[in-house]
Image (cartoon, rainbow, N blue to C red; front, side, top):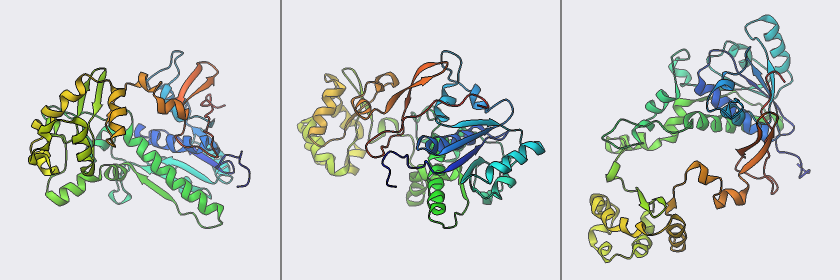
Length: 364
C-alpha cells in the first residue's frame, strides 16, 4: 500500500455471525478475532440474534449498565439484528455473504451449512477438533482449561486448582482465528484460493500448554503446580511483590546481584542442583528483596541483565511507564458511558496506534 494513512485491512469486508445457543467461550473468541480486524480498518458487520448478542448482558458492568466485556470485544464494528431461524433472515445473510471477503462464526451454529458454503472465506471456531464429532457436547471455558491441563498449572498443590483469570482460552483461540483470517485475506488479495479455516479451543489450549504433553512424553509426568518447590516464585518486597525469573545462562548474574557468598556453593552451580535445594535457595535470596521497592529491584536487576519483574494490580497498570509511553490504554468517547479507557491493539502502523471506536448500539 502506498497510502501511509490507510489502515492495513481497510479494503476488506468481514461478517461476524453470532447465532443463538452458542457457548460463551466460542462467542468471545469470534468477537475478539473480529474486533482486531475492525480496529485494523476492516469493515466488520456484526450479525446479532433477536435480542442482541448475550454478551451485551454479561458482567462486569460499567456505571451506566453497559457490559464492559461487550464494549471491549466489539470496538469499531457495526451491528445488524437478523433472525437466522427464518427465511427472511437467512436470505438477508446470504446477500451479505455475497459481498463479504470472510465470515467468522461458531460451531454449532444453525446457520453453519450456509456459512461454510458461502463465497466469503469461512473462519470457524469450535470447541473440539472435527475428528471428535463433538459439536453438540456441552462445553465451557472451565472445562477447556481442565482438558488442556491449564488448571494443573495455577495455585498451590495442596489446594484445589484455580481457574485462570479473564477469558484466556477464548482470547487465545480468537488470536489464532485472526491469524487464519489474515492468511485467508492475503490469499484472496493475491488472487489465490483461500481455503476455509477451522480453529478449536481444545487444540489451541494444547498448543498454549505444550509443556504438558511434551513433559508427559519425556518423563511420564506433566509439569504442574509445584508451590514452594517451584524454580521461579513470587517474593515479597517493600511495596508489593516481584517475580523471580532467570535463565540458566543468567544464573551467574543473578548470583552476583544477590551478593550472598552462600550462593557460590557448588550445590547451586547447576539448574538440577538449584531445583534440588530450592527451599534453601529461596531462604538465601528472599531477604535481598525485603527492604527494596519494586522499582528499585527492577532497575538494579535490569542493569545486571537479570529479568526480575514487578507484579502490578490492574489499577497500577494504568500508570505503568511502558503502557503510558506506548499509549496502550486509550481514552474513547462513548455516547452513554462518557470516556472509557480501553487497551488498544499492542502494535503500531507507520508509527501510530489503532484508536478503537465505540461498540455499536443494538441494530445500529
